[in-house]
Structure formats: structure tokens, C-alpha cells
View (cartoon, each protein chain N blue to C red):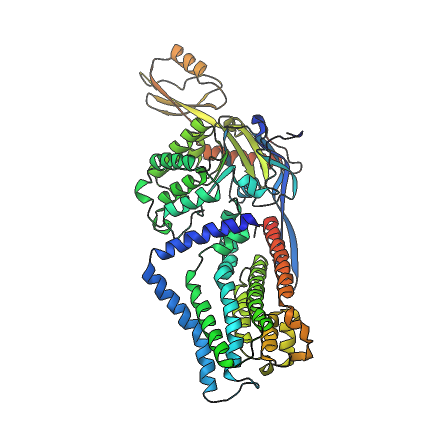
Length: 341
Length: 267
């Protein structure tokens, strides 16, 4: 990647690469009648990560954490204040229009479609603007329209579409030119359950069939759970966690719960490291660290107690992230440390 | 440059097709545009029903000034009239959606909501100009004819530059579309009257600061054989193409600076 880059493609291992990328905004606030104070805000603070080709990565964090700013730098909308950034071997801020041919962007909050015109007009324009070969355009359009069930909506002006319909329309628009990377900024925000499921199914299929690299920011952790094997957590401009979804539980000190139904009422089961947190007749709740396997615990209980039924409950991931951020911030106050996968 | 023109062409073609889908509506809005902009000249005609000359100029002469400026402005308004929406796009963040497309932002902003109805303004400008040419009773020489054509082209280019520069200013001040309008639409109205009716300071301003005087005053005064304001030298009548080129260059620089500042601040 640092050597000569032929054809503009980055190697598959670091298709997207960020090295100590920063974005500093200068915010002016009025402090007196004529006095103004300049304050520098680090929206993104020395973030480094790589994404391999074909990966599907979730990018999450609280409001104002720097998610959108990162996406804007990755798409070439914003110029970074520092660090090095490459997408498919291209420096986004320098070669914005060249990069545009290779990426698709969906902003959940605003549409890239032409508001007053029928959906199909936007697609026809994309066809010409991106110089998509006619056959490719037809194939992609037919396929997307079928999978996202937009057939009957093609002649409807975009402003008359519902939020879910518009979002699906936007996703199609972002994919007509076969982008190698798809950025999704809050793709399921405000959608109903059915629309959400349809969008998720579609993205999963796209990733599996075309190997499209997907980076998505979201508030909906179900998106992450159902789509991404890898998740990055950002807070106050810093990358706090980068790794598999399951690993979040370890960092977050979270616990899973084993619910066991016994043949009869019994005293609390002794099975370290699990501890009984609740007893209700023959049913007992045992909490154990999310990082531990449930198998030995179950074996132990089955061997020592008359077991009828059992189930394992996963911790609420939202609570895990909140706890993780809280813990890391507490620990990281004087000298920030980064969580590593 | 080619990419920009291509994108501009693609987007305007889309809007024109969509406009033409409702022909009756197009005819109505174009007539409306024609009537609304033509009212300016009706006002001038009413004025001349009471007076014989305005600042020493007779009606056909004022019509000549009016026709030149209205036609030139009409072209600029047709081509770039949508640019005053840039501030709103910056405010609501929809400018970002233009930045992820493989086409120059300027072309996309300029072509957005291309309003073919703005032909109405050009038509009334051309009609008034035609009336002036017929009733002026001038000895037309090749250089005078050339001057008229040059004035129209350069004038349109100067107004285009003002539109672009005004839009560039909206990157910094997002509520400035009215400021832009006062320079474009306001400037155009100013040019409909002879320079002799205005204070010297104002004439100086639109000659040396915002060079609107080159849109029609200087070329028209050359054609009419009238003395120039501010005792300007005679050759300046041939300067409009140069002034227009300089204005466009400056406007492009301003646009680039504006876009660069947007991309570094995100607001």
C-alpha cells in the first residue's frame, strides 16, 4: 500500500486504511458582546484502522462521537486535518470524483435522489453520470428493484415516497454503478420492522454475492448483530474498541444469564464462577461472565441437579456498550488508552 | 471543465424533460416569467408618458440599455439562476450528497432545478432590444453590430460571475442569498437606466468595484454615440470581454476557496 499503487486498488487486506486520522474543527462561540472565543474541537482524534475487502463492519458510538465525520472523510466530503487515509488506494479528499466511481453512499437522514422527480429519473441520470454500461445498468436496476420491491414505485416522485421506500430507493441509487465500498450512515433510522428486515436481508445478500465492502454506522444494534462480524466503537473521536461483536462483552464486563428449571425446589446451586442471582420455586437464574463458555457450567449442573430445562440469555448489547464506554472513560481520564481486540 | 459541462448538460436535460411532461404548466410559468419581468419595462414606458427624457435619454435609448441588460441577465439567470439555493443546501447538509457524485459540484448546483421558464425573461429582453434597434434611427456600422453581440455575451458572462461569486459567499454566510440577489437582480435593474441619473459614487462603484457598467452602459454609450460617465476613455467600450474573463476567473477562485472552506469545516 505504501509502495507503488497500480490501478488504484489497495490490497485486499487493507482496502480501507486510516493512519492516525484527525479532524479538528474550530468552533467560534460568543462569550461577550464583542468577544468571541475560538475553541478547537477534535471530532476525530488519531484514529487508525483497516478494513479488508468484502468485510462488513459496524461503526457505532453515541451521538457526536465522530462517526459521521469519519464517514465524511472516507467519502472525500471532508478533508482530514491530519493523518493518512486511503480507500481502494485513493486519497478521498484529493481525488473525490475518481473515488466517487468506486463508492456508494447512503445517508439515512437525507436523500441523494432528486426530490421532485420520479425515482426512475434519478436512476437514469446516475446511469449517464457514472457512465455505467447499459447492460450492467439494466441488470443492476432489475435485480435491486426486484429484491427491494420497488417495481411499482419507479414512477412516483421521490417526495411522495414513505421513509422506508425512499431509503430503499437510495440504496438502489448507491449500488447501480457496482461500487466496491458501500457506506451506510444510519440506514435503518426511522424504518418499520418489515422495512428494516428487508434492508438487512438485501445488504447481507449483496455482501455475500458481490463481496461489496460495507461500513455502516447505526444506532440500532440489531443492525450490527445481524449484519456485522466486526464492530468498531468510537467515543469522543477515539476508537475505543475494534473487534468481534462477542468481544464487546468481555470489555464491557457483561454477564450472560443461565436460566435452569429443576424438578423441584432446591437450595441455590453452587457452580463457580456462576452465581445464583434469583430463585423462584424450581427455577433459578445464574449469572456468569459472558466470556466464559456455558458448556462446562451446564454439564456441571446437569451432573449435580435434577435438570428439566434450561436456556441462556445474552446480555443487552446496548447496556454493554454503555458500560464499556463508562468504564474506559473512567480508566482513560489522564492518559487515554485504546481498547484493542 | 468537460466533466462539468457534461454533468450540467445531463442534469438540465433531466429537468427539461420533466418540465416538458407538463407542457401547459410550462407555457403558463414561462408566460408568467415573461410578464413579471416585462413589467419593469412597462413601468419605464409609463414614466415616459409623462416625461420626454430621463437623464437626457429618450425612450428608445433607455429601451436599448434595458434590452441589453435584460437579455444578458436573462441568459445568466437561465444558466445559473439556481445557484442562490446553495446556502440552503449548506445549512441542511444536502450539499454532501453532491460531493459524493463523480461530477464537479459547481455544475451540479448550477443545474439543479433548471428552470426553463426563465426563457420568459430573455424573450422580453430581446423584444425590448428589438424595439430599440428599430426605433433608434442609428447609422449601423459593422463595429456597432459587433459591439452589441459582444456586449450581450460579455454581459451574460459578467452576471454569471456574479452569480458564482455570490454562491461562493454563501459557503461562509449561509443566509446571504438576499445579498446575492441584491447584486444580481438589483444590479440588473440599475443597468436599465442611463448612468446620468445616478450619483457619481454609485457609477464609480459599478465601474471599478463590481464592474456591472461593462455589461451595457459602456457598449451602449459607444453605439449611441453618447459621452461616457466619469470621463472614461473611449477604448473602454471594447473592454467588456476582458472584464468578463477577469470576473469569471475571480469568481472561480472564490468558488474554489468557498468549497475548500466547506470541506475543511463541514459547515
